[in-house]
Figure 1 (cartoon, rainbow, N blue to C red):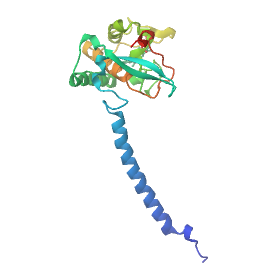
Figure 2: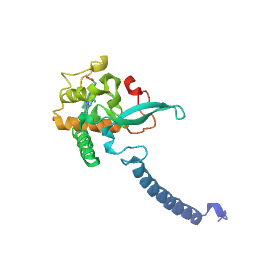
Figure 3: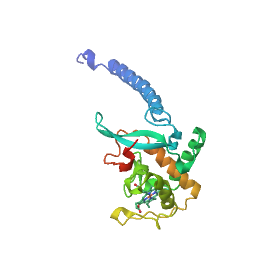
Figure 4: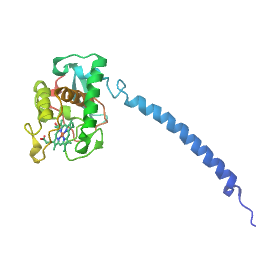
Length: 200
Ligand code: HEC
């Protein structure tokens, strides 16, 4: 039998495998906690739920070459200022409605979903909703009866009526407003915000 060189021995590679696996495991645990912190509401890029009481607008960040969210002054949703717990409850109702009605079948939210219908990540700031004050009312009407209030973007695609209650629709709007305040590193890329939002 020929002599096996030191680097080809089974013992060495067994040790390497054990150390690499153990090392990756430690890195994975660290990254898991790091990601959870980075995606929690109230962190640097993901505002607390009570952001729905404030104006959300976008500004071009030349250094990062992206549109980044800027939180402005008071602009309570439906004229009601909510505390953090109430805001969280409303946004959660919206998120659960979005999950229960499977909006992702047609839409994309934060990169997950389909592209049959418009991306919802920044739908709160879609210029098509027109003025800031009319927006929440228009959205409410649209969500509760999309067939009667369809805009269709010239595509002829229609959103079906999903039997959402008024409270659920308000929750969805709160969820969309909160989502639009998240700094997503410029995603979705071609997003352009309302012209009238450029004032602070
Ligand atoms: C069967 C596919 C389908 C499902 C499911 C669906 N939508 Fe839509 N949605 C559409 C289409 C198509 C449009 C664009 C047509 C239009 O505006 O009339 C649209 C438009 C929208 C818009 C306007 C987008 C913008 O950029 O302003 C919002 C907001 C919206 N949908 C929210 C929802 C929510 C919330 C749900 C789940 C509760 C949902 N949709 C489920 C098809 C769907």
